[in-house]
Image (cartoon, rainbow, N blue to C red; front, side, top):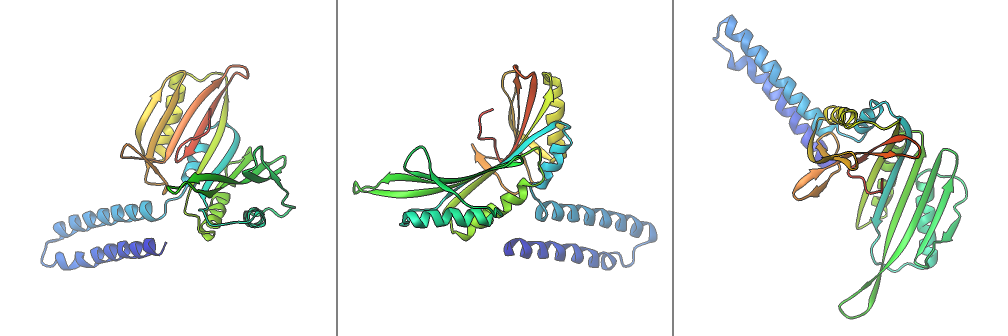
Length: 280
């Protein structure tokens, strides 16, 4: 963050230096030349300012704005975060304390009930309500070393689904990422997905119209796409969102997909950043 602030200050300095140099450069010029030069200078300052805004004031909320314009019935929003917690020794009590810390850290105030998963290497806590479902897991993964011994690596998983809402999930994303940073996770990856639905089966043309508007609103460039009736998915990159993954050297941070549920006669829309990892 401090690096970004330093860079933003440099950008501001460039803009102000540009403004200050204009009168000096125009000494001795006639009024017509001065007028044209001032207009050009103002245009350049506007361009620099826009570049500054795009570079230093980017966030995932742009995706929320674009999603709400899609005019679908909002089904839910989901945060799925996986953090590598390393191989340091942890007792069972340490593991439970970790889950309790995360549970309260994301803002849950009721009792944190911890249970075993289907296997002995997973412990979890789950909270369900009419509005949301939160699952926090700690999963052990045994790794064989070159000396034929085993290390236990732990992965923290935070899975939050909020029903019929897209505005709250980003605040949970920030909280979750702040928590795993404080816990000094080796690495972590987070994914946010918004799901909406339309009545009936949308044609390819209708899906294209919705997708193209997303791409335009996010000032994105399409990287890979498959726009078919059975498989419709578009991967794109926008500078308005900070996070991204790389695939074959290409940055990707927006994934738009559709599928059709024949039983319900509904077309589902999925919008994810950076990519959609769930089945659809």
